[in-house]
Image 1 (cartoon, rainbow, N blue to C red):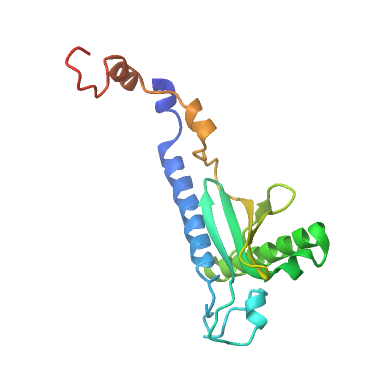
Image 2 (cartoon, helix red, strand yellow; image 1 turned 90 degrees about the vertical axis):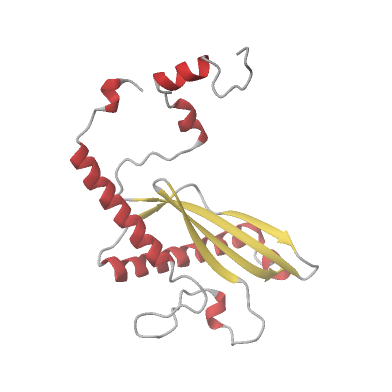
Length: 193
């Protein structure tokens, strides 16, 4: 990294943007905490996300129908997992099943936005990336399957966050002192190095 780049930028402005970004991510994280099965709102009533588990009667056997959220740079990755029958997978064909999984992820995103608005007092824009969710169907038995659907969304309102992807990490320059260290042999224990 050159010295000109290292000292570039307004450090106070960068700190303010970093704090604003951190607050948005914290609020999203709190909102995502309300996606679990059995979550209740501020009035003590169960949170209804529109998932299949919300309309089922309470039984001893839990129905696998849940969502989860993780963060990667300026993206939020929403996952949906469900246990469904093979008949449901084949009922409307591939495109019908794909659209059903897209709608289930959209219900999770809508619930996330609603929870974010309730917690932070403002709305957030999540822009979907790609054509649709990536859907994997795993065989459990001749009757049941386990479905994983994943879709990433870009979080609007964040400053230019650099995602630590493999390509971007490889593009970064090494500091001159680290290059010199490697040229001298690094942590080599060999006395001839």
